[in-house]
Length: 205
Image (cartoon, rainbow, N blue to C red; front, side):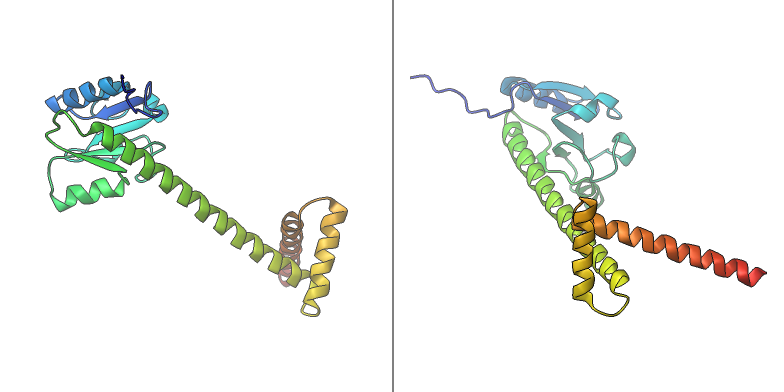
């Protein structure tokens, strides 16, 4: 019975190899081709089309920030660092770009497949965590906005009545409580700015 190779969702993927011409590139290309990926090598920088790549392998030994069309740590795809030198500065630089996996040079006849799977899983986990953090920050910001809106409506008296008023306004405006709070805060800020401008003019007079 023939066993079908287990290569989940990797066939047809595109991988860029950012490395100077070297046997390392040839070794990686052979493994990628055997797995079913399309390999493209480049040096000294990534071309614009690399933004649509599924994976990027990069040389941690001779790499520099300007090679990438994105800020350090903000790659839109999984990164695999190709490490030959274990100099602390080089390792630190690779870490600054948030490499999701690594391959030690010289690259032999194996290792690329596992690096791809590890990189993809690490990248997806990092994206998921970043999404959760962004969501939490958004919720905190919305709560702070609601607190500011309630304070503006209550003017230091009854917060519960002010919150009920905020909900009533949201219903009448047919928007969420958060959007209503943002509107109230914006109106309050505009009024404050107008009062400050009036004070400045009166002082000048």
